[in-house]
Image 1 (cartoon, rainbow, N blue to C red):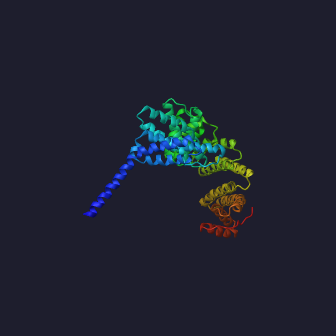
Image 2 (image 1 turned 90 degrees about the vertical axis):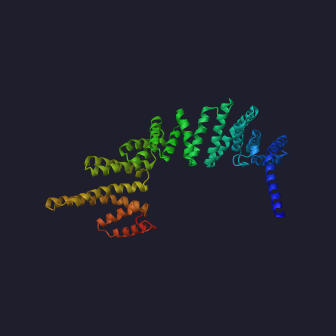
Image 3 (image 1 turned 135 degrees about the vertical axis):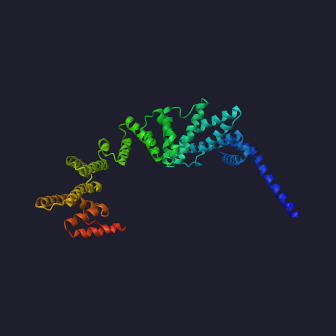
Length: 440
């Protein structure tokens, strides 16, 4: 009985201490305010008072009582504004001076915003707006720093806070750091961009769309919105944005390359040619564009071969060879262009080989045709061989190159076929050929 009584007394004491802590929330918030006031009276000699104010207001706002008080949130906003302002003052002397917190500006804004939302008395709301006026520019400053440091999620939240602050200030007819429409649009764009880079795609879309609906003159907005819609699986929406963006910004290289990639993915080869030629005019030194255009003509060449349209096949073969050649003229060691020219001749030979295998007429006329095709095939292999040799010297572990060399040397009844078959098996087995057979 005695033990039960003592346990009950212990429980009541614990409950009483919790209730006291909650009741003291308001007092603790007031004490934090006083500590901040003391610090402001003599900042040089009362530095400890700012830390004391921070500790007390954070502790106070863990209680429901203080959480219901606009004055407590205002104190928190003032404390964290003082912290970030101190950081920025130190950076006037030393630009690399560290911040005292991760983002005290955002903490201050969140506190002022909470005070604004729960305020009943006019002066509380007025004080909250005044606090937001003071913290808005630092939300932008910290956002820029986080973006530069590639902390894109943190940059997003800071820029988002700046935009929210701007909306509250405009609603209360107060001046804002974002009164300039150009600066407002710039921060709106970087809010979306930061979210995109942080892989927060859904969060990015509203900011891109805000600018898109305003009729932005920033082509990057269309690029960002296209990428976001593509990532979210909205193919129709993405295509709509891309078409509008290309129409509005026909000279923008980013949108042009995006369109090229979209057409490549869709296999719309005919449409690609004009886009790639436009891109080459803009970036004559971009070797990949020449190789890609060569590949487009190469694919069209093979399509015409299958359709037995010899005139078109010859035309596309010539164009493919031309653009691969232009790539090599700019970079003689470009392995993609080197291999592609070899493959161009090789694939033509492979198609003629199919025609040879289809011949069933073994009369003298049939054999003559067969012999002519065989000579043509071997001639094409001879034209392909130097390019495959060069490609192997540049990359001795490319499977396609090794297959082609094995096949060509086998056709020529050359023992080198065994060498390249061995090298091919090394790669297929997960190994690597340490050195190339041919020297570049």
